[in-house]
Length: 291
Image (tube, helix red, strand yellow):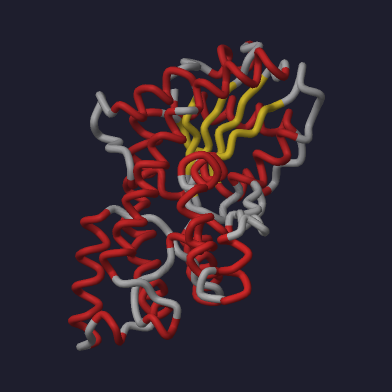
């Protein structure tokens, strides 16, 4: 690890962490708190992997999808063909809807679903983009320091990071690179957190990235269980059905990432943080516990 002890972490003049875990447990909240904590020379640069994916690596796919829809409207078609209007996404750290909307959900087209083959194509685009965005983090560490003068760095990863790495492979290229530059920190949720995330997702199901093998197995099982064909599947019903299974699939992968590459902190402790100093102290305790 980059910091081999609590003392080394506390004494470090440049603290660099990579937060990972289920979406909704506080990664972006903590990253925002750290970013707002102090001027650059004493503060934290916030690098959002999802934002990087949505702007640098999938921005053109997203914009083209908007344009494809606009071309179906005669007025907009005419304006687009004459370069009279510009259509683009307004993705931000706090609003990643353009990215998730592009990923989509498989199922009946009249309910907003995608053909499964197109859905898997977009999933693969996300996988490639996520790996690239993760590997961009070291560049942004240097950029944040040299260009803006930031002392510290927090990498806010997407919940799907565990799907694009092999946490049990000591030579995993992504985790090897990231752990050389940052301390991986797992925000671990309880069973109560998991139940709340499932309830929240059930109210507003959203597209997510999953491993291809997991998705193919889930799709086949769902079609068989419902005795349905692709064009009959309710897209929201499928992603709801998949979500709890996905959390169970991801938890051991997060645990292995923390065990082999970093440390873990509880979501309860993260929720109680009020200042950057609180965060630094929490990570110091985590290094003591895992040391």
